[in-house]
Structures are given as structure tokens and as C-alpha cells.
Length: 296
Ligand code: SAM
Image (cartoon, rainbow, N blue to C red; front, side, top):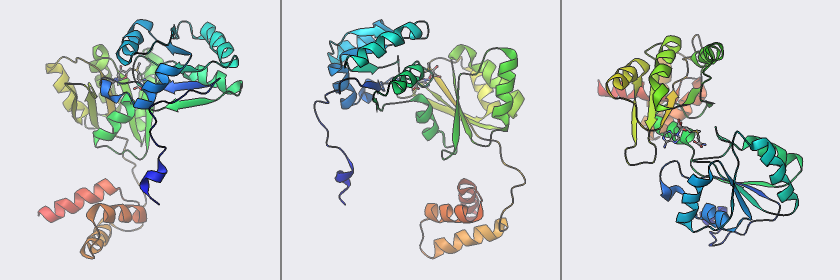
């Protein structure tokens, strides 16, 4: 089958369906990341619900959308919800956007989607950038299994509880934090996960001064003690190493399997994946061991 058959053809105009709620992803820093489909919907729905009408007003001006904006945020979402459901029942189409990224991901949206589902109206997502997954895929840490914690609670007991969970979590964990509280969070993470735990911090993703800072929690603390945190940050923390895992074969046997596959002409990343699946050793670990052996 031709690859193109898997895609819907791009349309210049995406006409919204009556009575449908559109969850629309907007840029997390780079205007170029607003998709043509998102633009089209934001110009054609009956109403746009947004966190901050002034901020979203600027975006609408840029894309020349004349659609009315209605505020929908954590302080008014309950009363607004009724109003929005009524509009949907009257066959209006509504787009929900947040200040940046995907609505529902640490932004208002979840409650409204739940409510729309209960009245059995359609909810469609026009996907867009999300800081969490963007930071994850550039982190170099394991991406196959991960969990998202958003912002950690500020209250002492709740925070300690969350930090404990994160310290024991074997999957990669993604956390959001503001620049003012970044150092405190890193010090808390160091207390619970240890300063040697690998971490990668994405700063100002998709923006001009985008950077990735990382190695271990201890090192990034030193970095931010010298360089005052500025901008937006997403933290990606390596999962706790699972100890006492039973492997089917020894390390050297696994490495020999890997070398054999490569000698038979298999590409090294594919060979590492196959051996990882077969033996339970991590692909990344096999890969690094292989390269260390080859370097010697
Ligand atoms: N809904 C958004 C999303 O889909 O990513 C997240 C909104 S949450 C209120 C805002 C937090 O996301 C910021 O405090 C920061 O931790 C993270 N964030 C947003 N934009 C970012 C960026 N460009 N670079 C790094 N982190 C970012």
C-alpha cells in the first residue's frame, strides 16, 4: 500500500461538525507549530473557549480568526461548563484551547471533555505540541514506558508522598516546574532519588534559546546554582533501576548473542532490540556495553 493512502489528504478548509467539541493543541513557544488544521478549525468554529482571552486574542489576530472567545479557566470552569454544553446541544461547534500546548495536560479541559462525553456529543482532538512528550523524546532517557506527574504538590505531606513515589518509579517520570521553584524541586528530588540519578531538563522548548541540561540531579543543581533558572522547564527523570531482575542468560552470553547477530549482518540497533526482547536486558545497556567492548 502506498504510504500516502494512510493519510487523510490535507484540506485548506476543515469544516467543523455541529455540536462537536474540538480540543486544539497550540504552540508551546514556536508559532510555526500551529498546524494548518488547527488554524482552519480556529477560524471556523462557532466559539473558542480559552484560558486567557487576551493571550489567545493575540494568537487569533495572527491567524485572522474572527471567532468570538470565551474565557474558560480554573476559576470559572463549573459555571462555564453549563453554558458550553447548552451551546453544543444547540449544534454550535466549540474549540477549546489553553495558553499553550494541549488542553487537559495541566491545563483546563479534562472536566469539559468528561461532561461532553456524558451528553454523548463528539470530542475531536486537533493534536499539537505538548511540553511533556517533546521533552521526553529529546531526553535520551527511556521513552517506551513513562509517567507524567505535572506539577508536584506544594503542601509538605502531599509533596513528600509524591516524591517517594517518583523515587521508586521504574519508568521515566516527567515533571513540570516554574523557574522560581526549580532549585527547590531539584534539591527535593536529590533527597529522595539521590544526586546520582540521571535527569535531563528541557528549557524553552521550541523557542530561540531552547536547551537541554542534564546528566545527574547533583550536576544540574550545581548548574542552576550558578545559572539562575529563567524560562520554562520540563524535567525528565530516569526511572529507578530495577534490582534483582532475573535474566534468562548471563551478561556475557547476551553480549555474545548481540555480536553474533551483528556479524550476521544485522544493524546494531535492531540486533540490540532483538536481544533485549529475548533476554530482558535493556536495549540501551546492551548498546553501551557493545560500544565499550568495540572501543577497547
Ligand atoms: N498544556 C501544556 C502542555 O501541553 O505542555 C502545559 C501547561 S502547564 C500550565 C505549563 C508548564 O509546562 C510550564 O510551567 C513548563 O513546566 C511546561 N512547559 C510549557 N512550555 C514549555 C517549553 N516551551 N519548554 C519547557 N517546558 C515548557
